[in-house]
Amino acid sequence: MTDEQTRLGQLREEIDSLDQRIMDLISARARCAQEVAHVKMDANPEQDVFFYRPEREAQVLRRIKEQNPGPLSSEEMARLFREIMSACLALEKPMHIAFLGPVGTFTQAAALKHFGHSVVSVPLPAIDAVFREVESGAAHYGVVPVENSTEGMINHTLDMFMSSPLKICGEVQLRIHHHLLVSPKHQDHEITRIYSHQQSFAQCRQWLDTHRYGIERVTVSSNAEAARRAAEEPGTAAIAGDMAAELYGLDVLANSIEDRPDNTTRFLIIGREDVQESGHDKSSILVSMRNKPGALYQLLEPFHRHGISLTRIETRPSPSGTWAYVFYIDFEGHMDDEQVKKVLAEVDDEAVELKRLGSYPIGVL
Ligand SMILES: O=C(O)C(=O)C[C@]1(C(=O)O)C=C[C@@H](O)C=C1
Image (cartoon, rainbow, N blue to C red; front, side, top):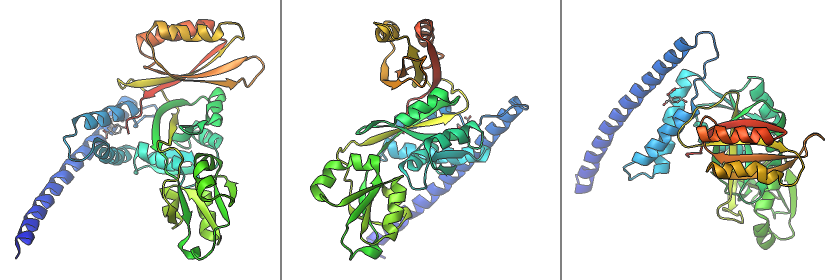
């Protein structure tokens, strides 16, 4: 036996014994989660029990990132624990997560990043269908895109909150990499048409103008649909992400063709109940003010006075004549914080309407 073989043999024995210990520990953790489920059910025998606790999950993942000794990166370590918690939660209650489909979209990737892979993810054809699925109780939570760093807000999502009773329970960000994809079956054909979603075309506009100028661009309902078509039609390509490429067996002709290297989409988790404080939270509200001079100043001044940081403010047209304009505002803090309560009481006094959309942990992953 060579020195290399001897050393490899020793290290593999060590890995086997560590794997055994890891497995025993994960099993002990899973039994603990089962016990937690019993405690929750015993405490609420008559009611709907909420097994999923976003604030607790955020605390666990934050602690893992802070205490990670390396050499794995904190992101990688948190991702592993994300999957362990996902499997533990599935033992308590299998979760159904509605997302803006079809299968293979970035929204599905975001849903799995946030909840882990032990959930049942349910594709729906439109943003309002995701809201309805959660409102009716058919899904426990929903995942919808709300903003892209290149293309701005997804107004349809914002507008849904004006009429929906759902709460925002979380947020997750996803780095969006678009690829130019072709089917290996059609490699001999010259590409005369590219399919993609309108947002993806917008995010890759400069690259397309430089590298594929003059080729017909056809907008379809999703990147996954673009990939499906490219898989079937000779002479076509798709712009889509890794999940869609894998799902439809496409080859990457050009990698990461998005114009901005930091191209990121933010998604919201929507649900039916409020989330407790996690210690590092954000809140969202919708406010309509009377159309009078200084209205916006009056709305924002209490945030400044009480030292609450605004992270976003968007203006949307009012859905009815009675609302002059509607502001969608995100700020740091939880609605149970004393300072936040004071600000919202003042805003409420001045506003035509104030709708609390929810407080939720600032995205960890
Ligand atoms: O602490 C809880 O309430 C649990 O149910 C346990 C646990 C976990 O595995 O750590 C599982 C699911 C919840 O979403 C949060 C945490």
